[in-house]
Image: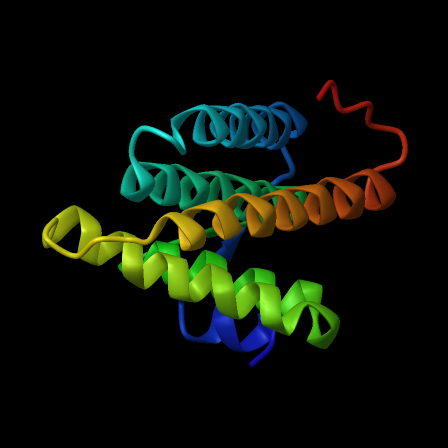
Length: 150
């Protein structure tokens, strides 16, 4: 899959880059990550869910920074796919974890009797940090004239 195919399938559309939206999503992703860390010893499932949302916000920032946004149904899945394409094979394991978190978060929201172990919630924080930091690095590299206040 590539970005052209995502466009052909009508899953993404081109937009004008809005630096404020990019920065806002990244700032919120960082805040979500901080919140997830403080929640870990209270609620593993919610920590995991917050981490997923931080990844989702960072993924949206990546899309917005590249001049795209998801459209139609399954937008979360589209964000994951977009990140997988842009980050490439070096980050395949991480984007696979992002996708797995997407599915597990769905189960937690709609079937709350499925627990997430403490160790998995703790690992989700580490994975989220890696993804968010990588996306920030990519955005800064592709927009060197833009100062991201993070």
